[in-house]
Length: 131
Image 1 (cartoon, rainbow, N blue to C red):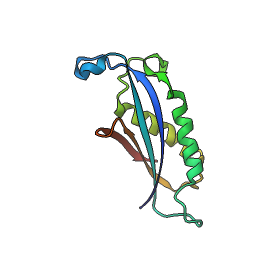
Image 2: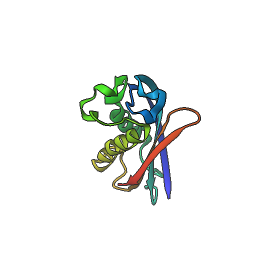
Image 3: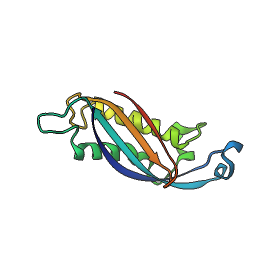
Image 4: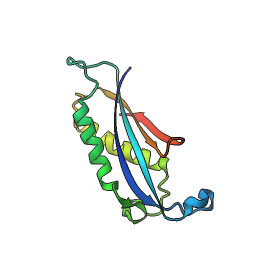
């Protein structure tokens, strides 16, 4: 299987109001490095998995509504713990929608996507699924 990965980042604020989160219960900021990996069985006639520029643009578009936001104030996240894992799935869903619409120039070849969020140099989470 072939893969291509693009990277971006977001800065957010949020709280995780449950004792299980210890000091992260209170409002705090986070800067996430976000990797999106696209998997195909084969490369196209130009030797590509996906167009890097289009993939980068799609990831940026998915992240834009989150940039510099307090996620506690985002209505669609009300009542949700906006953990790193949750955000991985949220970003995956946005990317899957764009892939299905042809936004990354894959001609339907992308079979799987992995979204990885790096919380720090020692912690990361990801969600991967079929398209």
